[in-house]
Length: 427
Image (cartoon, rainbow, N blue to C red; front, side, top):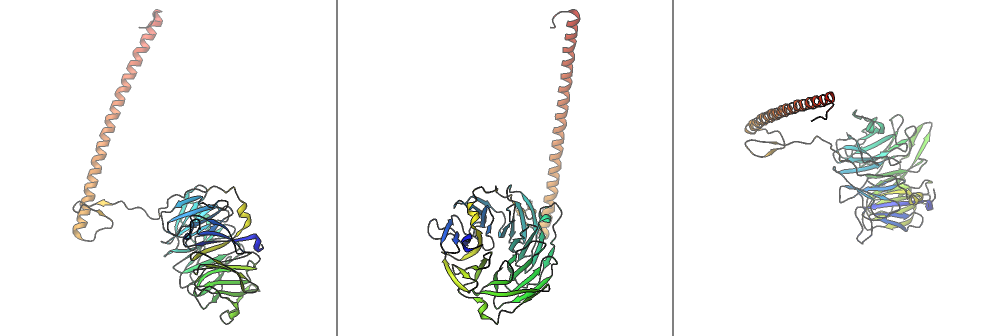
């Protein structure tokens, strides 16, 4: 794709200060000019998703997912969340929506119906990144616990059995900040970056680690060209680091970039938050907390455009112009409420007149709880006996009416037969 074929969708931490200045904005990568602004926008980091039909993002001030169609600037659908969402992804065709929570769960919905498919405990701390392979076969999750897990999507939506991760990668020592996986399950490398200043490269087919690239700063974003010959990593120091990846004899060799300043793209004054690259690898877009998006000419290592925003840029992605012509979006519905843990039913304590939220530890409260449970059991037994008695009385009444009906039917039948025998009208 050329620069004229691809747009850059950016989002800020909140709506702009002026009316109509949406938190989501679409930019022409070739000219650096704004094409469209989507109202009611803004997005948290790692929650911006672009499909052929929709753009979706988690609103930074509300725990709700906002969905826009490409043709209209107003919010198409607001989906309230019952859990605090920290990461968001859709399958490439938009069939399933996948969210990560601050408690480490992965939640999967069917987008068209809103049906809740599964809730899976995935990480010990919050889920920071979610990615889906291009063939929709696997979901990759990264957490603040420094662990990356690979899940078969079929196990997350396939039935009542508890899903188990296909791979668990725990080589990082600090929270995962970004993940990249371009290929399919048959042929793919996975790139993971962390605040431990490393990028680790994994072979998806075998689950083995191929290489580790050490950087001089904490890493916050990662991308590669589509041929996967050049690695780009965004740093917390505002730099975009570049490293050559060479594949020879099935062995991945990574050059140390720390000794080569020419491999650093400098221009941002605050941490880089997101990276996106064109399909032909000619230009790179980087978003930053300094409220700018820079478009880089990769070959010349020069900035071609600086796009100013009203607030920190939290995410960006490359979008095909063909999406803007899509006026018949597939259906999407409000998602079912997720319940990650069994809801607690409070028990009233007989002596304290309050609701217990935990099992009491002192002896007096424990005895009161036992007495309350005993009284509740007696009360339920009495209610059951009363309902059984009422049911028995109703059954007796039914049988009595049934006998009356049979008697009336017998008398009526006798009168009819007598009248027929006497050839006279029945009384």
